[in-house]
Amino acid sequence: MKTLLRTLLIAAASLLLCAPTWAQFAKAEDAIKYRKNALFVMQQNFGRVAAMAAGKAPFDAKVALESATTAEFVSKLPWVAFGEGTDKGDTKAKPEIWLDKPKFNDYADKMQAEMAKLSLAAKTGNLDTIKVAVGGVGGTCKSCHDAFRQ
Image 1 (cartoon, one colour):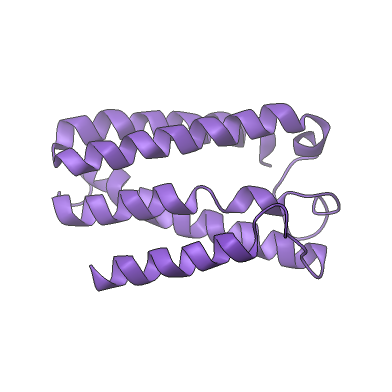
Image 2 (cartoon, rainbow, N blue to C red; image 1 turned 120 degrees about the horizontal axis):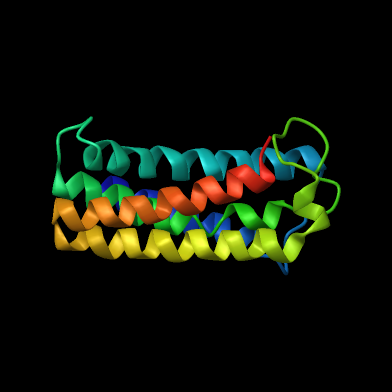
């Protein structure tokens, strides 16, 4: 629990420091690095739950809850770092993100909503409920990757 609390506090501080109204990355590379790291942390935590849902890892309700909760929280972080000028460099982001920002933002919102459902499902401790929610998250991730990731 201490690890989860520490992770959430660090993520909260990051969110406050990088909220859209204050977001001033020194360089485009900083924004790219920020979003890639946020997405990596989210994927790692979601991946733990998805592995349990797929039977590739033993089910542990406590770990599933901690991972789902962390993934949900971190799912709010990367979007501020998709600003102008961050379409070039070490990124797999397609130019379509900046050409159709409303659609991209809609996908991000849908994924965050599915992450919230996953977090709620993990609170039940029921693997079958978690499996359904994992499918929802996975679907939204795939949709966005298909449209906006190289």
